[in-house]
Length: 293
Image (cartoon, rainbow, N blue to C red; front, side, top):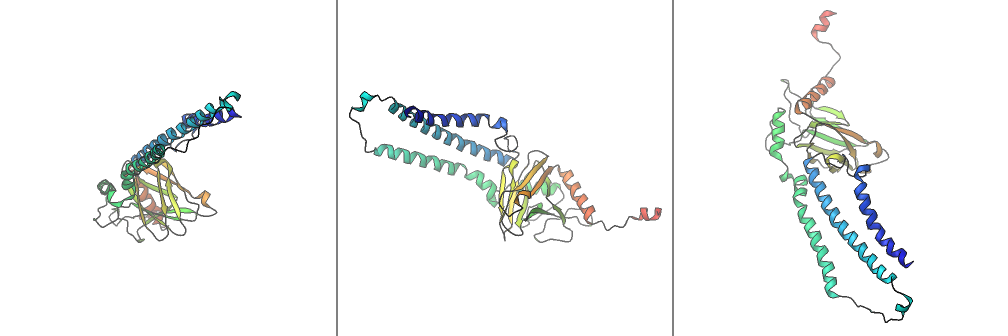
């Protein structure tokens, strides 16, 4: 049993390193083939890998130390049993070291992640100039007090309802107002926004608490009853991404799935025009069609 415990504590760090080494090739890593699909997601991944490196070194070092102590004990023979044992009542120097060093490591992690946290969560740190540039390119001009959101996403059991701004009589895209307007456009489980630029949504919930989760972009924000929460993100590529609920919100939580389509700005406007045509169609054909009849 002496050698068993020695090998037992040495086995786990080896297994952990092997699993981390082969995990990406088996798809056991981050979504999106382990690569974040947004600039902010890349920085979040960097934070994760930094913490992973610190915890890995700590875990492996601790297990090796345990294995070494047990190895030394396992080498004792029957003749060594009669030798006088050495007892230690502790070392104040070692206690200070293993208290201060972890404290400094945790303080370093806390300070290092502040900038990423601020860019994602603190409103004054949002890339507002770039968002206004996107709004200008899609034909919207907003004042300093207007919301920069291009869509409103409302979670409810068990779907995502999306409200887009509509068009005026001249065909210009209107700004998104806090309250629903007669010209607004609606979709369910189908969020479309421009790609390759920071965009914002207003997140709400109609009933219980939900969580807006774009795993490949590393974006996650709880939808809290009674609050309108601005959420910004940027998709690096024009493609389709899964949109999930990451909060257990009831018996149908498992089916609360949607899609986020990041697309060029022209395609985004065309999508809104298609919604406008569908939702404003009254079943009456145009004049040319009626004359033919």
